Picture 1 (cartoon, protein in one colour):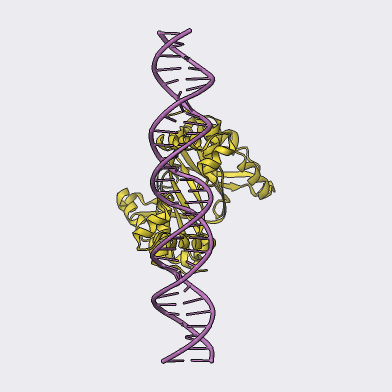
Picture 2 (cartoon, each protein chain N blue to C red):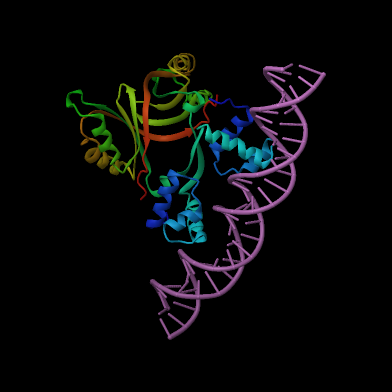
Length: 152
Length: 152
DNA sequence: ATGGGATGCGCAAGGTGATTGCATGGCCGC
DNA sequence: GCGGCCATGCAATCACCTTGCGCATCCCAT
């Protein structure tokens, strides 16, 4: 584990907000030359701290206005392997995120749909038919806010 | 809402996996010149479908090995406004995501901590002391897999 | 004190990708 | 058939990435 100084943390914070920031711009903001800033970014990548870059796809703009979080408890009787469940759930196109968790539920899913009626179709035809699925709990997303989170 | 063809959808899919892909590379993969590919990306941005670019910060590499999802139900008696709750919860540095949801819970939080002991500190000192907090449910993240999701 | 190594910086140069102007070809409505 | 529209390719320019090199600083052992 490498240790970060204030500039490294500022880089992480600003890049997490806008991944298009150039090394030159980041350096200018913190009194570094463009190559110096670039090498810091490179070091963070090599340390595994910067783990790739993603574009954010706005599902609402694509017509998927409904996001639902599902908590799924597997039926203990079913004797279905976790691999079977995961294989089946990752094959559902509407599923964006599959989280294997510990607690009241076994899995958490993030599911997108065009509207509530579309979500009901997904729930009935896709989720409830998953192998070994037991209790299911749903929460419909109203608003979502991402925070920077701790940086060390 | 603009309509996308197969190439647009392929661009979205590949950019969501790797935001560093250049327009030239994307074009080469689908038989387009670099400017043509670049203009398609630009069009997706202007339509609001490509909503920014983020770097992914690996919290594990920073020493935050524990991620917990919290479901929070507000105490109905409390008469605490949602704004007060949200203001207080966004001030907690360990909170990465705040989701206002509909269902069994009122809010869902994504919280990171260095270890379980650190999480207990956050839970006791930060979460349980939030204004109006009622029932709290926790799920500890084991593994997480992101899927492309539907693209239209 | 002092010399050597490690670390991090700035400067400069070369390569790659982003961005724009311009011309061409297909397609649709008149 | 004909004119306008749309998307494309080509070429040129500009910004940024990437690397090599030399210098200053700090730490540590001599």
